Amino acid sequence: MAGTYSIIERPSPNFDARETGVPVDMLVMHYTGMPSGKQALSRLTDVECQVSAHYMIEEDGRVFALVGEADRAWHAGISYWRGHRNINARSIGIELVNPGHEFGYRGFPEVQMQVLEALALDIISRHPIPRRNVVGHSDIAPTRKDDPGELFDWRSLAAQGIGLWPERADHGPDNVMDALSVIGYDTVDYARSLAAFQRHFRQSEVHGHADIDTRCWLQGTANMYAASGS
Image (cartoon, rainbow, N blue to C red; front, top):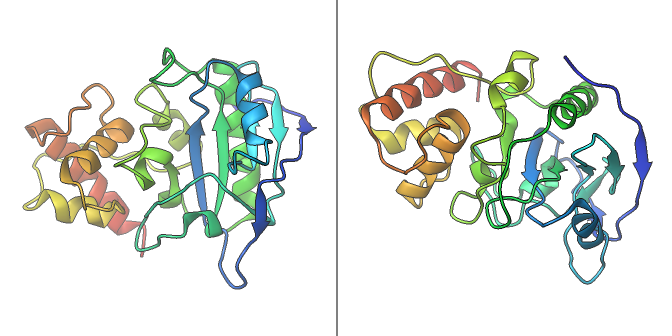
């Protein structure tokens, strides 16, 4: 069930204009990966750090608006999804306060996820973001990033229309890299791209190996993404 939220304005200087003619058709989820939300907010609003997102959601559900949706926040970095590389130009970025794998990764509180759901639904109502383009930072940058990680509840979000969740197929793909490409991954690093897939869709086992169960989930996901359009 989606939560209610109010916006706390905390403008970041770290943004620029979006490119003319590029649609906002992606929603990217992150974790902050810092010991506290206070430290993360300071970094995201520090001109010297040159990073930002459109929103940051604290563990207690507070929502900070950092960059207007009409502008380009600097959250994705070097990235790729479904043929596009300049992901900042076409995306909204949401940071979820969580210490991340470096500082004691933990589950995301229910109130934080409920507020995320409400905010994401509002964002999707304002922009032409297809469900296949609701992704994590690790999906678009598998060689660099692990967030929001294997404890993030993608399945529940998908049940509310935010992203997609597959059915497991009864067989694997003929070619694992081709299946990853159909979903949208950059396959320059096979193992890390497969681990990013597992971190999103097979969260109990994140090891970058194409075991039988991973292959079946991969085929089911590729089937679903292929059916969702180009």
